[in-house]
Length: 288
Image (cartoon, rainbow, N blue to C red; front, side, top):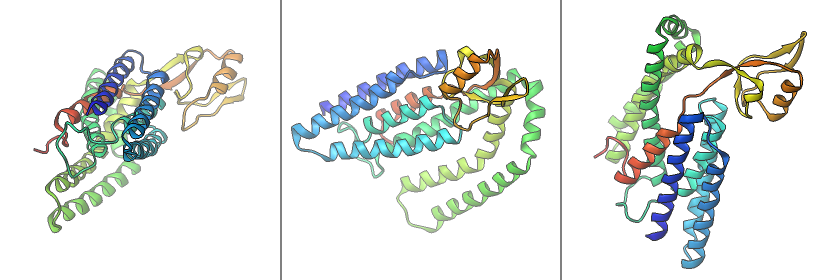
């Protein structure tokens, strides 16, 4: 019980500090993420040694590994920054097991937390995007219309409709646990909405999240959106995973002034809110 309370307290405190940092600076210091990972491993090892409960450690390692895969997939898809990815790995080991003070649930606790984070994140992203789109509406609406009628978006809509139909069919034709059905139904709804969220996000990115940043303000992982030339010579080629320190040093040495960078939406606050909701209820949002 005490170890669970300690892990939860440390996890929520780290997420709160990370959220404040993300809102203020659009960055999450590495010491928060690495501290969370290190503390989670140490506490789970200590508990396992003291009480000979090695599953407490193995589940932590499993949670860490799963969240490392999820975080890296989101990072490579340019949905999350590097700081988000490291933090989700910390969440994986801290919240790998259901705290003993919460009632039992058929779904793994970490899965419930991730689903809640995604739900809160989707709502947060919609509200944040609508606010930015409204503030930049003259530029946003023409851009959104162009994106919405693109070939890629049409394919995405067809795929979303297909998989949503399959999800709905599964819930109707199979005898599954009510919570699982609710989860599949929610997934089907998210699939249908996702193409339009993509239009909103990409439109907002184009008109509100692009800015020219001085090279000496760049940090590794920043998404530089254009190749950089000087006197016809290519100094930097746009990378999917963001700029590296070696590239930054090269641009500084070449005395490049500013480069076009895409800022991400500060996404750590939904991590914190989703975690709090999960700790309080122990259930997926919307399921009684």
